[in-house]
Length: 116
Image 1: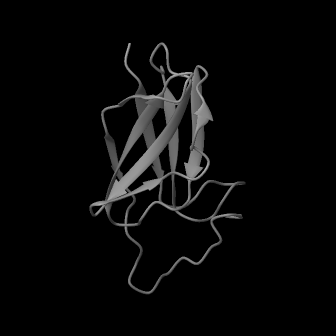
Image 2 (image 1 turned 30 degrees about the vertical axis):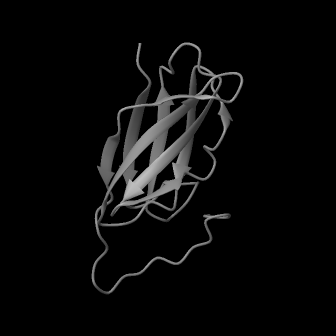
């Protein structure tokens, strides 16, 4: 079994959750022996921990909506996996997604701590 990352781009937001462009991140089929996970997003050579998926207890699956994903840029997501003692086991294979770009006369302004 291998940890799987499933990404769904929502360029028009998610009704009832956020009007902002976002990526739904689902970490599924987590490897045996993994106790906690941290999801990383890499875009244009810069890596960031995904808010809401840092040192999360690994159950059967973990998920979050990433409202900080860049628009019009390919992003890759990978899962850093840790054992019960906090030692890193490995990284999952990266999965990529691109949010479609905005029209030239559009811009998004939102608070990532309250994206509604």
